[in-house]
Amino acid sequence: MFIRFVSSEIDEDSHVLAGLFCAASQLCGNGLPQYELDALSELRDWFDLHLESPVQHLPRTCRYELAVCWFKPTAREHLTRAWELITILERNDILIWTIKSPETGHIYYEDDAQIFAVPSRDMRIVLQEV
Image (tube, rainbow, N blue to C red; front, top):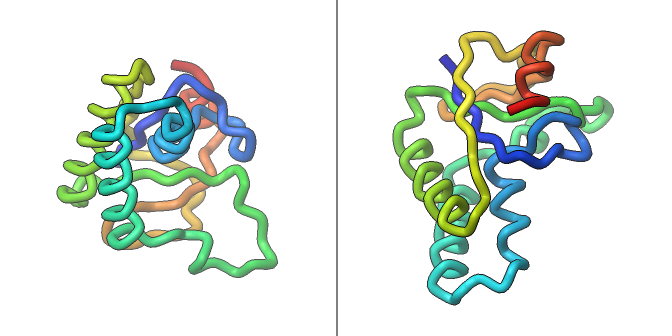
């Protein structure tokens, strides 16, 4: 079972509901109190160190705009930090939904914490509406 956290915004690249990190990026420019900015910064720094960018591991000649990331259920520390990020987002009126699925679509990249996949047609429908 793979896990994806989404907001209500549509991502301009993938054309599905934007993920957790897109939502966090949008929040940073919204006049947050310093303690919220510090907590967001700490979490972003942690993910920068502990979560690979799938695109850096793939051939640059291909296009991956439609692909999205999913956490693996075994990525316990990543999921714990993701829930911390969700708490901050929801405290600031950005609702996040959790989608769990055994099927994600065509996988381009996989590591211990995540997969990067182009959603199947059926999954794309799920990822376009909450």
